[in-house]
Image 1: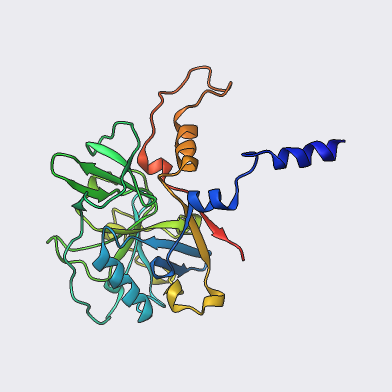
Image 2: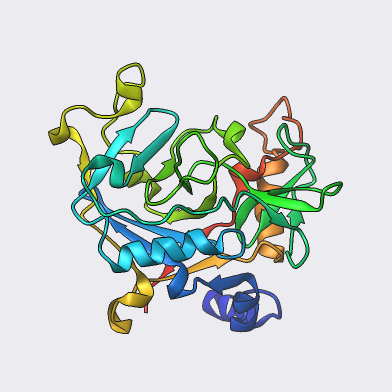
Length: 281
């Protein structure tokens, strides 16, 4: 009898999501936009964002294909700030500098507002799984410096980025928004980035002086450059889906019995970026 009840429940319309519903709520990450970093702690997956930073995404594809980063390291790691790697570490070939892609027109984007106020932008929300913001008065949109954001470092002049990247590891970096180009975000393996050895910000601005203490970049590859049978496959929850709306609601409305004093029903875009999952064949 009990087994019959379970089977009947599974047959009820809406009791479990159908394959069509699943496909509507999740999207596959394009292998051309899936950057894979191998570290000694574990593998890290990053989704590149060609909608906001096409030239920077293409630069990272080219650098990965050239195996530029293999054997380099995260040479500058500052607690609560960023983990950085690139050509500043040694005598490496120069790549042309890039023009900043710090913001773009909102036209053509599928921007989904959080509905909560933001300290750094008129309107905050999500686009393509990334935390993003936009200004309706200027018609410009940009990506946010959330934990896990991957961006291009530069010198003092704006258009001087080339190969030095950084990954945000602390929550208090939003003041960098629109000053440096974000071109990706970590969708898996952020815990391995957080394990990297730190430098001392007061000494050499966080550069780890003892090279033996720097965590190596074993390899960096784009999934599309790997044989199809060995590529990892990732999906990201669509930020215009009901599943993502429910996810945001669960973070905004804290009405469990534990909360005898209810927190304000607000959310921050950085804290509710679209979940990602690795798909096992």
